Image: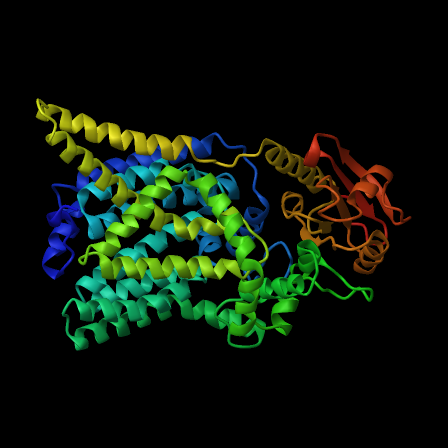
Length: 561
């Protein structure tokens, strides 16, 4: 590594933050604009439809904007999803034609701001060359573009995660009460986007104390900084902790682990995943926590450390295989090799080592948090992206430097070729990253979302407003203006009894296959075998585009129905 670029002691502060000096800020502005343009063009080409989780966030934002409280599609207080993203969407809702437009605008801006945030982080740790590569790589990664098109908090969380890492690293190098306060505030905001950030913040505090002490700073200065960091975090986290604790009936920092832990326990004891999440028993009592989050959160607790360790042992090996497969689809293997090289460089360079160890501990923590879960979703890998992009930029920068030095030793070479060599190396890295990534569009899946949107809009015009709708997905109930009551995973006779007990206004049958619910295929082909079920809508199409809507006659008719 270039010593001037990689020095990270207290005296190197100006060098590490050179990107925000007037002479270098042009790169920040240029790549931010490029990132904003790239993300905007991608999002503009997407179909105007919400995905499953996005529909819940959209309803939360709409209810907040209307003064109806933090209530989502399930009708009761929301205890699983953190409030920052829907609050932010609600605050700009008046400037857009619909909630999807506001949500995508917020995600797009957050995704664009991630570019300079990653550049500053890379500059702090490895210098200007790595910073520019990190900015370009952040723009080029299709997985990050895909997140910008979804009405979910991932893009906002990644921005706040990068901000928290930036301020933590800066606080390690230069203890200051104001920096500590800012660090805590940003981590507090990250917690309000994804509550797992509380664990990252908790790990960052001892790391801050250790690294700052290692760099020769006084214990009193470090202590004041940590105290102010805790104060800043508490300022933002406390209101949500109080809300969550009041609704759940006990002190609660987050509730997702209660739902995930109950599903993991059910799978551990032999239930298939969908039954573990959406099952009912012979007495029609809920077995799966996804059937009613609030009820389970009020009556259950998070798994103990021992229980979670048991789940990691049970599900971890399979999870590692799945996540590795999904990671290599999102980020090509050559770039992962560069990231591994960048990690090794950071561990071998004594100036980078304390910070690299801190980042490595965070990425291992992020991975461990997922390995105790029996379901594997590519979105769960998003906290890893900033670390991989950072180390990949370090590795790519070192590769370009080594090729440049190798060229200098070639007899008869010309110095003019040095720049083309660096440009070609960088272009090759970015091309591999862009073309080798799987963006993950699924035309059949998008067709299913559009079909649900169309069916939901039809139902809205025919009595769906305020209705209780049983479905396997949130999208149709959202567009119908209704509330979701999940269809259970159970044998047909048991499911029919449960529907009768629940007495919904409508029952939706999407063609998502028998694995989703055992009775769907038979009911789609032969109808629901119950005199209370009357078919009022059917839309044909391939796969998930085939949808039926039944009026459940046992319910009171709604106005306009």
